[in-house]
Length: 317
Ligand code: SD4
Image (cartoon, rainbow, N blue to C red; front, top):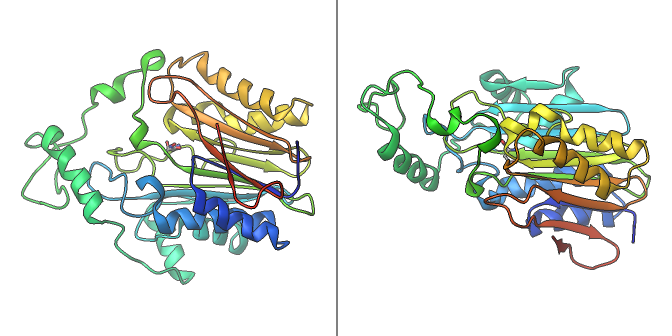
């Protein structure tokens, strides 16, 4: 059964779902709901894969990707490779509302954020340092890369492709623990649709790597005349197929959310049969669905649905 308003998010991030739902329940907008919900995960660093203190890159730094889309105006704000700022979804919204641009990246995105009043802080925690040091033990050969954080005496040379990164196509696999980004889609009482994502991306990524989450149509997409979708998983592969855009366009053409989600996943599967990934979809009548690629590391995909049918957000598979 469909019910409006509704907000849906990837993975069992209950507090984020509750934060997003509290906005809709009190008559707020889909856009505010998505921002509030995603920001909640940034504060709690949901599963270590959102916000500060998780997924250190090859130099030990945590960087953030986020986007938000207003399906009414088709405006988008996004940040990628954001450094030193915890509230990535907030910066994404500032890009959308305070600039004429869509996507800001890296150091310059951080400077923009600081200029807009966001506080610059270290995104490193004991947890992220430990993850990084564990990884260094196994991977940092002498001369592998220079100036490695946090021990500059370890010199590590230029990037060399590692086996996992070299695996092209069909057999490429990702590790569940490095993939649990929040993607959120909301439909408010006025029929406005919004979508958003926020993540610290892939653990041990090459510095500068940007995932699918801040890419319009890949991480998420929203159009109040068709619906919304958000994807999660192996962003390096998934962004090649713009699954969120595809799902929304399928719903526009009349597909129900379940068929749209399934088709978006199977399109990727044709080329990457064991990719790690899932997608959530909702149409403008409040019907929703999800699909995942049942592959190693993902036998079931959990997501949250919040609408007036229940007092608390419901966990679905
Ligand atoms: C990325 N798509 O950076 C993100 C990670 C993710 O579930 O969604 N994990 O590749």
